Amino acid sequence: MERALGFPWSWPGNDAVANVPDLAELDAPAPPRPGATCLVSVTPDERVALWALSPSQHEQSRPLVDRASRDALVAMRIATTHLPLVAATRPLRASVRWSVQLAAKVGLGVDRVLDGASFGLGFVLAAASLLLDVPVPVDVCALAAIDEDGRLIPVGGLAEKLWMLAAWAPAVRRVLVSTPQAPRAREIVDDASLDLRVVAVSSVSVALEVVFPDARTEPDLPPGDGAALRGALEDVYRAAVDGAPSMIDWATVARAAARLGEHAAIRSDPRAREEAHVAEALSWRHSGRRAVAVWPSAELLARSPRPVRLRLLAHVVSSLADTQSSDIDRFVDEARGHLAGAGEEHAEDLDLLAAMGRALAAVDRDVDALDVLRRAVDGWFAIWRPDGAAAALSEMLRIHGFRFDPRSVGETVERFVPGVLGHVRTTDVARATVHLAAGRALTSVGAHDDALVMLDAPLDWSQCPSDVQHSRLRWRANALTRAGRREDGHRARRELALRGSGSAFPALSALDLALSLRDDPLPALASLESVAADEIARWHAPGLTPVELARRVALRWRY
Image (cartoon, rainbow, N blue to C red):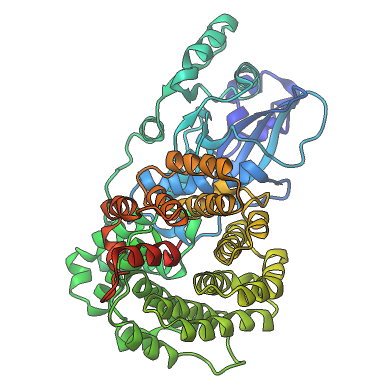
């Protein structure tokens, strides 16, 4: 009980504690700080626990693992989708290391980590609290899960969790539950006369309005003079150049950069104006939208430390590759001048090489692209960091695959893939990307069984970007069909049609099937053009027949 009373959610008030002689000397705990909230867990053996979530580590901290850890990352992205990022951009660069401390427990056994899928809305509230720099009110606890798209999901063990809050978290008075579960929650509260108010929330937006009623939903410029504006711009610019992919919603960061760029104090300063423009373009690219960043000025490059300069150039060169700009050759040559000599490359040099390889492949300079990419992959292995080679290796495999080069595909898979996949620092998303690239290349050269081993790897594909998930389903369908398992291939295509609705991938899959059956590919190509006209335009070349165009698109599509 004394431990529980060290947390604000368990503090019943000074008067209540004063009536218990053994506890009368205890001081009230400090109120929650931004990023902190309470969570409740129930284990299969009916152990119920109250936890204090924090965005930092403490002596008694216990880590989030597996599903809980992934949901915490998803929650930051969802929170940034719903909240402005101008006045409070610093959390983008802060080191958020979510952890929990045990406040109280009912039942036998020990919980050394926190896992489970029922804490999602609590994580979103904590992330929003950080972004707003406002604490989650101490009287609130969220009992709802979330999916990747931010939809609220009912949780298990609802009765036990409500009982735990009533018994061990007397400061909590409002319990947020998903709308479908609200009637059951109210029934439990009424039947047991629990001193709790159930608040039904239909979405993350509604939950944020309930908990943070004064929060703005449009970007708000920081108050004060130009120094505050430049500080906010520095945070946005650094976040865009660093590019932490799966953590935040980049469209929100792009809008924040645009909002800053509109201010007179930024527009009147050429340096700040350029940084705002670059940050906006890079953030749109991180979000998945094609946006070619203007080549940085000589002044911006000169004042940037070399590692930052190379990271910036890598982003810009990659954005040029995404749009097949006519300036690719010129800018690749200019980027080459910033590289260290062969054998002297650092990580930033190798990332820039990978971007250059993608750009060269975008203008059909495949041989030059392979030379650059091989230098990047060899460089990562030479500095004992094969985990960093995932992007360059994936592009190498893509090119070898559409060039129908079985020997190069086999040698590349055998020599480099195990080192990247087996390295302790390779992220789950990078690992999945390499599995996909290897599976795609092996399918393209006819090694269908080996391809399926790669594409059916026991990974959590749901945590990957949607393009990776959809592309994996596409190439899995191709491998199954070409291996003679047509019914399994049709099932994979139906799954892709369901999951990839609105994207280009169902039409791509139909195009694959038409080409493999030697049917007319034009209907599928027309369907693809209706959802990805800009992308299709890049594959046109003088003298190509429609069938040749269809084959070129199917083979060389980037994902």
